[in-house]
Length: 192
Image (tube, rainbow, N blue to C red; front, side):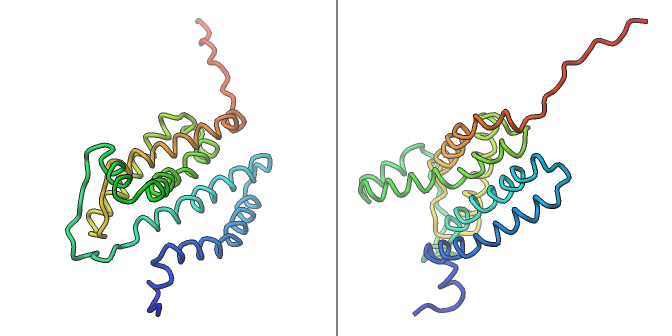
């Protein structure tokens, strides 16, 4: 029997259900934002990118912030040795569990990596997207630890989250040029 809001919203199925249910609201938000923009030539693209970043990132972050069975009781666990957790998952959980874990971590900040360079010209470089994804992932891992969510705060998660954002940024790279405003070269000041 499902009891309280946690039974609905605090599970993987609840997150998926809410994400699907919110899709019409996301579409409405894109439409409303696009209508409010003065520059009609980029209004839809900018609005899609903004809503897409939120819609494509929040459910993943929500899922990884769901508390485990011993939340608040078990002390926080940290894994700072790269690839140790991935190897443990493969040996203990098998290839299917490892695949789900890797793909899930690659997708956490993929929407951010894909859409942020389209929306923000300052982020239109893979190193900047990687830096942003690492920062966001470190914040999430630190929150998992500090909130004692019965999760392992792992450097592997940070690496995979950043890699997913970087790969997504590479996938959208051909559209970056269409969002940049051309900058005219500076002319030297006239001599007096």
